[in-house]
Image (tube, rainbow, N blue to C red; front, side, top):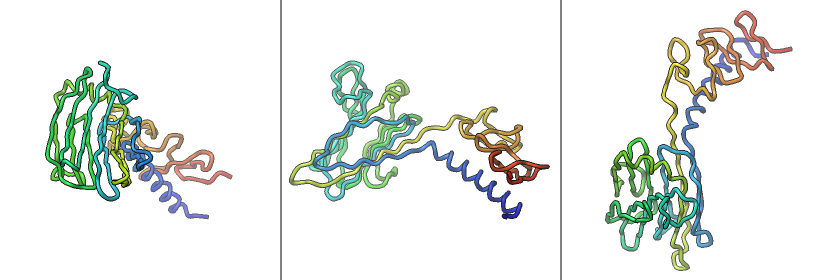
Length: 247
C-alpha cells in the first residue's frame, strides 16, 4: 500500500507530465519514403502556421520539385489554383522558387545552389516568409529567403496539398525521404484559459480549472491544496482534502 505522500507526489507528477504532453500537441511530423518505383506522390497537408518540408537523400542528390497547392490535383491551369513551387537541380546547381496564381507562373527568386543530400523548405504564416536551404535548418544555411506582403496571407492559407516529384533514373537509383513538420499556434491566453493565483495558462480542450484554482486533466477532480492532486472518481475519493482509494 503506497504511502499518502508517495500517492500525492505520483498524481502531481502525472498532472505535470500531462500538461507537458499537451503543449506538444501544437507540432506534428510525418515521414514518407521515395524510390525509383514511387517517385511521385500527392499528399494532403494538416493545418499549419509553420510548415517545414525536409528532403534527405541516402547518397547523391537528384533533381526534384515540391509543389504546394490549393488543389488536390497537380495541374495548375485553372484560375482558382494557388501554389508555391520549389525546383532544385543539383546537376545545374540551381534552386528556384515560383508562385502560381490565376494560372500564371511567376518566378519569385533563383539562386546558385551548393551540393548537399539534405534540403529544406520552410513556410511561415506568422512571419509571411518562405525560406529554402540545405543541411541543417539555420540562417547560415539559407539559400533563398522571401518575405511576402500581407495580401498573400490568405493565399498561403489555401496551401493544403504538396505534390512531390523526384527525377529518379536507373543511373541514379538512390532513395530519399520527405519529412513534413507542422507547427500550429496555440490560442492566445484569455481569462477563460488562465487558472489559479499564479495565472497558469492551459488548453481548455484538455484541462479544466477546478473552482478557479486547481488545474486538472478533463474528467478529473481536485483534492487538497498546495499542491493539489488530480484524481478519477472511479479509482479514488477525496476525504477532508486527502485521497483515499475506492473500496
